Length: 260
Image 1 (tube, helix red, strand yellow):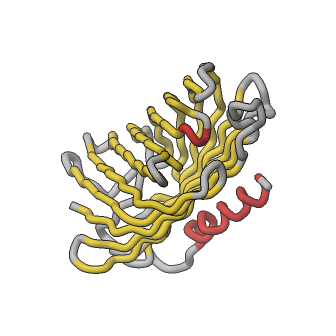
Image 2 (spheres, one colour; image 1 turned 30 degrees about the vertical axis):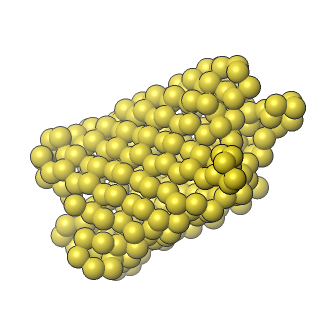
């Protein structure tokens, strides 16, 4: 299962690195690590739309996302994302998830950079009352042009989790990641990302998250975005009866993005 996910995730990333067309765009974003922004630039985006989830919950609801990108200096950029959704039926909560993520990248050379990141998750249906992550590492820019981006990174991540069964635990992970983005033109793009976390003490404890999103310009500062996320946790938290929760969760979103 994991091998198939990783192979499928690498296809758009490899295509982004092997495109034969020239890099003829002058001002494009490149996601979490935007080298086209100038020092002092601050960009924000809001997304709102439909979400469908499967796995530990089977839900259709509305979701919201906020993000910003800030170019601190020529070598340092900062990025923040937060998203949330909530669903209920007949007064009972049927699904909910709240996430926040921030990263600071610092360029060391034309190819190498280091990073510092932190994240928060609340997802009771996956078994987490609260999950806190912090990590640091280094990355290498295989491609980083206005038209295509391919980056690989790796580092250490520490995680503390408050579980819904009342217990808590901490973990030490090795984290590896790959980003591949392709820009069809100045306003239309496909972005993909895959992350692998492996417990440094128990190799059977690993987690893979794959994301892909297609963004198409509509008018002025509005775009349509379709995205898919797959998360596989080989050792998920336990249910109240002692059985394991589902190992695979997916979310599909279709929303309108406002960039400003």
